[in-house]
Length: 83
Image (cartoon, rainbow, N blue to C red; front, side, top):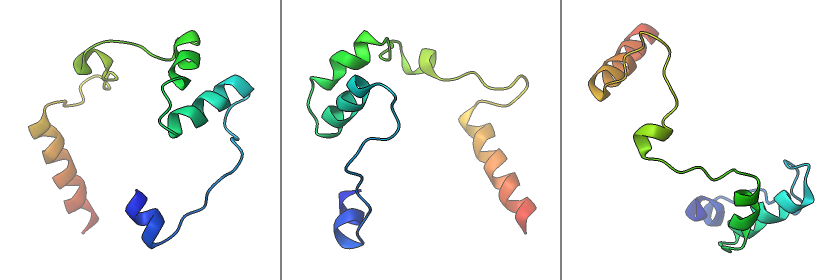
């Protein structure tokens, strides 16, 4: 991302717009600056949830294939349909 920003340029917002809570906006800026202090606000709001990658993966629609092989086949099939 830095390469793109440095080579091409990118917009930079000086004001956080996506949070209603000033504390959450400040925490977001802290995390962006790689300051660990921002995690406390996220933790206080129960935005940090533990679990394995498998436990945290969102459920798929019933009957939708989930194996890597099936996902690859689905992408190839979608690509063929565009031709």
